[in-house]
Image (cartoon, rainbow, N blue to C red; front, top):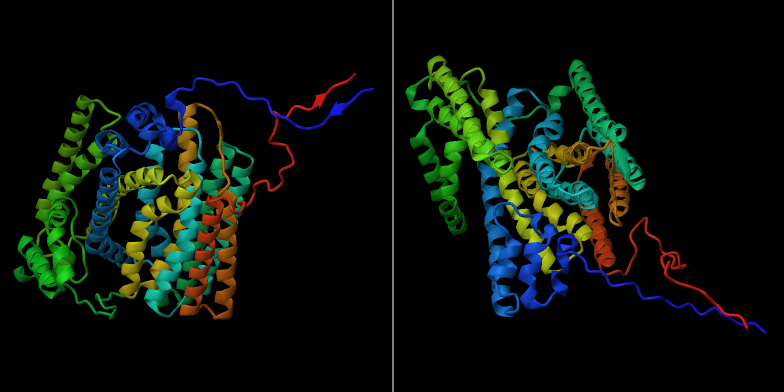
Amino acid sequence: MSTFNDTPHYEAHRNFIVSLRTQPCANVHSVLADERCLFVRETEECRESVHYIDYMHFMYCAVDSSNVALFSAAIVGLLMVVVVLASIIHYLCTRRYVDAILYASKSFRLTEYMAGVTLLTYGNGLPHVLSQVKHHQIADTERIYNQYLGSAVYQIAFLASTVIFMGRKFFVHPEVIVPNIIAVMLVAVLVEAFMYVEYVGLFKTTILLIVYVIFLVALSAIASALNKRGDGARSLILLRDGDGNVLEIAEPQTSSEERFGLWQQWYHYRDAYRTANWYGRLYTICMAPVELLALLILPRVHHLLPLGGWNKYLFTVSLNVLPPFLFYTLLAESLTPNEMGFLCLGSLLTTLAGSVAICILTTNDQRPVFFAYVALFTVFGTSYLVLLLTRELVAILETLSIIADISPPTFAITILSWGHCWIDLVTYITLARRGYERLAFAACYGSPLFNILIGLCVVFSVQMIRTGSMTIHVRDGTSGPTCAVHIFVISFGLLLTLLFTRFWARASLAMCLMKSYATFMVFIVLHEIEFLHGYGTDHNDDGEFFQDQIPQHAGS
């Protein structure tokens, strides 16, 4: 008689000695307190988020992690640094960045929609994309993909609702916003289809670039058609004051009293202090060092300033300081000191020659013909400074997420996305308060397209160059499909709502978008605690993951 024992049992796997270098940095929680410093020093993943300061080394080597009080005080200190960095970014955006964007958009006669999906999108997206290229050292693209899609959900839902709340009620022109929303929906489906097969090559990377070019060409064609019809002027940018009132700016006078120099800068700074409340005065005092640094690097451009803020001497200082600063902070890690010295010297000689030409050919009594490009200089110079500050802020947030034991996908689509989109939040709120809500609203749907298409295109290209292969392995993870589904659903719901409201953005629409983002966050939290499965994951426990299950058959 033969018997069969069908009861499953499991064999224990062999224990291998695993190198610390290949361990996830989050495993620091499973290490004894006196061994955590060694773990952090030896684990490569703990170095990936380092920008200027190694915060993981500080928390687990300089600070005794077994001392709860000291460790908690260090966490509070890092949170305070986050607040300081966020405040500096806020100051640069409100005092330099937004004003320069408005001036450049007005000078180049961009409509609010084109300015939102191009100039504002590129300025805000530059820190986002370059930060990923800087730290993308491994083949796994799951976190980057999740961050881009998580940021897209944040932008089209939370930021768009915030713009509507700030702008109260405004009309969005359907001929421009409808193609934008449809493009966001199609891109969410396209990139998820590419990532689902887990392999991306040169062909798919090129498709991403072509799709973005087609998007820009289509919007340009629509804007051109509206201009020929005489309808384009209805969305041209109007100059407004800080309260959103439309202004008529006369041609600048050539009197010496209208010159803008250091004393005028001091008067504006003093007036801002005197008219502010106690909080504003404290903020102004604390930001004084930031204003001094910005004075050397970034020209101040504003349509309410004399001659728009033009001063050839201040501009030549910025022209000679910013390029070497940019090269040093961008390439110092990859070049030798001698190479960096020669590069900075060559940059300085070039800008000095340009400075001499500017001093000879321009005066302080009249704006030069290229002053609109000075505004672009300020836009992208400020964007680069924000890039440096954002990367430091993100490094702190990543350290805190490891301490809080937040999973990398959830961290990427929540805290990391919020950190990278801080510049978006500040600029959109500032623009909406000043009466440029359509510009900010357009950027809410232009930025996701730039970040996803151009961001992934750049990351894929860099990874191909680093690996020397035309095909790379990618992963969308468990959160990628979740974000893609929510992007599609939220965009489709927005489109239907705009049709019902006849394309008036009202508080009811903002509430719907805010509820959609709240639903998304609840889903992510439930997914984090493993109460729900994310989209695209297997819900059936049918034994396919238990490959070490060995059936026993015995016979007699």
